[in-house]
Structures are given as C-alpha cells and as structure tokens.
Length: 191
Image (tube, rainbow, N blue to C red):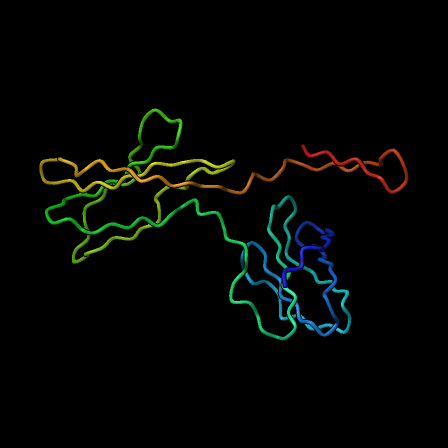
C-alpha cells in the first residue's frame, strides 16, 4: 500500500525527519526517494513511524512510503524518473561511413546536429542514450532523426521520430514562512 500522508521536517541542510502512520503496528515500511530504494524494510512497535532521510536543502524530490503486511520489499518504486535522455536504437546500414543524429524541439526553426561518428566495427544494431539532455519543463515535443551517411556524403531517408518529455520543475529559489493572521496560521511565499 502506498502511504501518501506523511510529513517532512528539516533537521539540517542534509537530512530531514520523515513521519507517517502505517495501517497497523505489525506492518513493514519501505522508503523510496526519486525511484531509489533508500530505507527498509522498517519494523516498528507502533503504527506511528519516524525516520531520518537524506534530503538536501532546496531539493525537489519524490518520496514514496510503501506499507506492507509482510517483510517483502517492492521490486521497484511507482515513481519513474523523467526520461530526458531517451535510448536511441537503429540497425547498421551496409556502406555507411558515418551516423548522424539531428534534433529539433517544437517551436525551434532549425535542427541541430547532436551526433556525428563513424560506425563501430562488427556492430549490427546501435543503442545509445541521446547525446544531449532534452528540455522538458512543462512538457516539450522533440523531433529526432538518425541518418546513415555514405562515402559521398549522401544521407539516408529523412524520417523524423517525435518524443515527448515531461521533466520535473526547477527547485524554487527560496521559501519564506512568516506568521499569518491568527495563531497557527502561516504565510508561505515561494521566491
């Protein structure tokens, strides 16, 4: 069970307390941060739980708390990191002396050459991570094409593939908390 009710309290610039309530005292908890298994299985005598987690000041992270009725650890988190460097795959082309990859983001007028290398020996299929990190804040469509180049400089077909990237927003520059209009109320401003 994914527990979505928790509280993070900073302790210093590098760690924080994470507090939550498990469904029952005998349940086991596992913590993931940004898709990585960080803590657990955590056994406790009470349903109320508190642990220290690595949490850098000004960081933006996705925290998952999995509460389980037994000591099994989930194989992976629910959270998937934004794929800003997709895996590009293509088959080798007989007679190719170079491979080039071009990129253009939606709204850009022209393409950019992001990869230009000779073929590798004895390779039938290529798999490389995109040579550049693709912008994705707010969601961005990207257009990529892989070209085989012959000895005369001719490129293969000009087929373009689209790829959508949705990246995490940038961390806010600062957070200011001041007393609000009544006891127990606070005004929070993000800079």
